Amino acid sequence: MGERPRGQTGVPSAGPTTTTTPAAAIPTCSLHNGLLHNGFHALPSNGEASRPLLFRQEPSLPSHGSPAKKCRTRRRMDSGRRNRPPFPWFGMDIGGTLVKLVYFEPKDITAEEEQEEVENLKSIRKYLTSNTAYGKTGIRDVHLELKNLTMCGRKGNLHFIRFPTCAMHRFIQMGSEKNFSSLHTTLCATGGGAYKFEEDFRTIADLQLHKLDELDCLIQGLLYVDSVGFNGHPECYYFENPADPERCQKKPYCLDNPYPMLLVNIGSGVSVLAVYSKDNYKRVTGTSLGGGTFLGLCCLLTGCETFEEALEMAAKGDSTNVDKLVKDIYGGDYERFGLQGSAVASSFGHMMSKEKRDSISKEDLARATLVTITNNIGSIARMCALNEGYFGAVGALLELLKMTDDQ
Image (cartoon, rainbow, N blue to C red; front, side):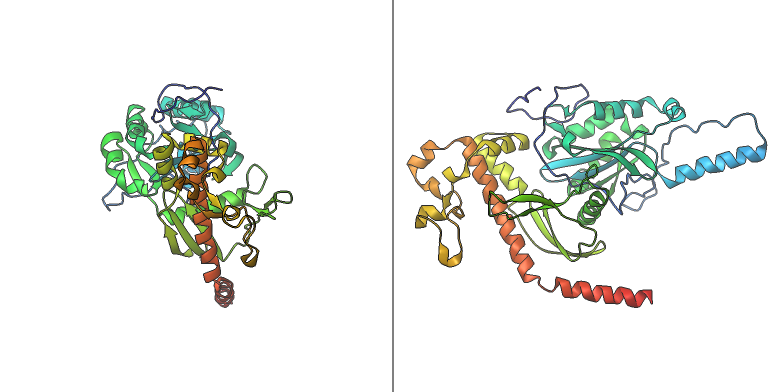
């Protein structure tokens, strides 16, 4: 496996690159209403009439057969095209730190479809599926790929691709160079970047973005991915006996009837949502200390330049060399309040000592940064769960109202 050069940034490029093994990440998919949309039939957000959509050339009908038979064939073809958009199928979540792209690769293409397929479409499919790295920072998370998936009646694989948001302009330029707008004129996107880069997509790549609400997409995407599972296995899980290293086990968790639930969305910052149904939710609170904080601090403390580098460093470090633990203060557990000696009492607390500062590694600093951010998020989520104790009662009320409506 090739190793990525350090200290370089980039974006998906047109040429092949060395294959890398990406660090684990959880994408937030641009999915809406249970289906991957690409907005072919959507109007621009400014309310103006859209330009004519560019589709593949219609295949000609056989010259033989009665006019009635030709008419029936034409109706079947038209009906199939109305029920689903033409390929390629994309969804984008343009965040403040990372851009997440999902691509549906059809695996049931007929010989006739392959013959009709335009070269641009073939080129895009081959480029995206033949590489696991694009440029110097574009990554396809192969370990997250969903195989043999059926979407809108088509069978294929769902790919997850990400790259730094700071390289967004180069990605848009690549779309222009590959003449992506010749395939369709609207691209479905969510996240803050869908607004920030909307004008650049239009002027540089001749692409119209169809913007979707970020939190709507988050909930719909979560429920959809959980419904299809991860290649036959449940996607969601929890840890049983998390405080006991010897008995701790990873267990699948079923989301068939998850409501009410707290959904903690960790992006550049963090939003905590109280979700009562797929269409009824509210943002309870959040924190500015999120993934962007982790990467930013790692860049300052270790000199790394990419999210992958930061995670790789954190995986090798020991945060206890940086953080002051309960046992460093009490000499053991603080039994009166049930605090284990291994609990963090003060994040980066050892760094007030010059001797400690001189003995730590960059990996230790990255690990401590990750632990600091995740501990903070976990504490906020727990407090929200305790303070939102009426979720169950609200869910029961919603069921009552639903029963009344059905009657």
